[in-house]
Image (tube, rainbow, N blue to C red):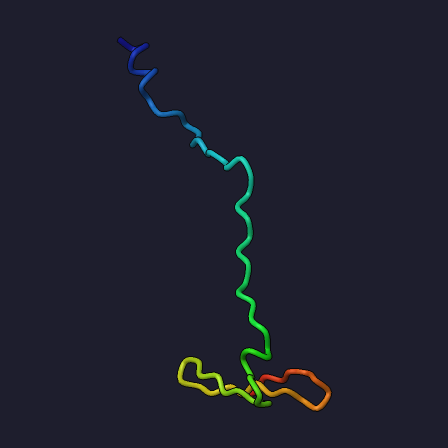
Length: 66
């Protein structure tokens, strides 16, 4: 009887099952700045009740300001 109880008792150490390989990292969405800006040089982005301005400079750089 003691043998059957010992066989049913949980082991003292937890069992951890690891995946065969790590999950692939999530890829960020990608969009062209030309699609966002269109023909303009500035875009207003609303986020959490705030406005952010994405501007294209004369040197073809992007600047994001609040």
